[in-house]
Length: 444
Image (cartoon, rainbow, N blue to C red; front, top):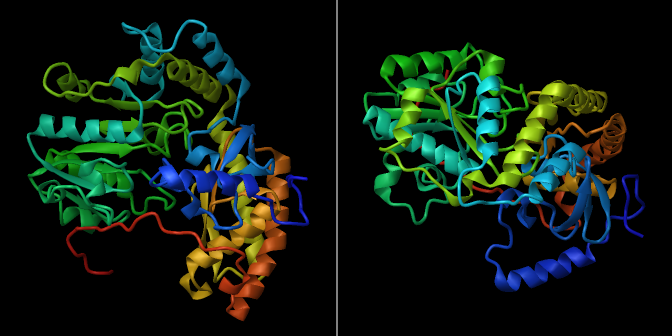
């Protein structure tokens, strides 16, 4: 029988997953369309590789094993899988069509809704992916300022202008790489060292897991304004989660431009670029940014339904409430076991991360060990708690009970110095290395 969300006797049977993987390897390079979903992010030989279906906060792999999911599609599932109000909206629109020969009325309806809730949304553009709107924001910033250089902080997609700052930069002209530099979060000096009259825009994630210190975001906004540089908030993770209006609502900062994709359509592919009208009007004639599927109506219907539900149910408050229980619960168990020097859970409550100190050993091996033990106990885990509205009290209770059982095993392995020997498969892999071609800054 397949495993369920319980303290299963055996590790999950992944026979069908492995069969599909073998088929994929013959014709796909690589086998995954998103690295964060691929086999390299899970303990090889133990973890499932392919899923079949999902409902609410639970997911089933192709072998029938059931798990509580804390990945949530790597971000887009904010309400829960197969959420009735969103799926009903998609089905209703499907009856009328998907993509059309002219603009669709939902483009206006969604834009009016976004204009109401996102502080900087004087003007709105709709696209399909986060990388799309990040690149559009950079392009229009260069056009508006007449400058070429870009400063970034965070992850901003696969396009040339950004990915040239990472170790996976083959195929990108050096001329493109030379125009972009990275600065460090919460290190204002690293930004000041790079910010000059050639910088068109600064794009950053308002936070990833660390909170801004010493008024960092407000200071970044001030420096950009003084320098004539446009400020872009990349709100793929913060938008509609920390608040319905995103980080700009939460922190009281209105960036010149902002970009969104995950969360606001509960899994349907759609992205937004919002910003100052005087900047955005360049898309009318001077800057090209268009795509056939930008007005695809199923995603538009899903977005309207999702945002409406978020406002009516105060979804960000629920994400924070449930996420805080997991964060505090994990840290409490670690403290009881004397593990706080080795591991902690931190971040904004809607999305937290479990980290391991280098003194505990190889971080990838430790993460893999935690994964294999949590999969056995019915939890799909990648080191994060990406919360959705459908995560129940029972889900939280089961997860904390699993941590209470697994963390003593981790402590034993760390103290024995033999985590690797307790793995039933290969450790997880790093996606890529960030290469910050930023000016050196002296340590404080």
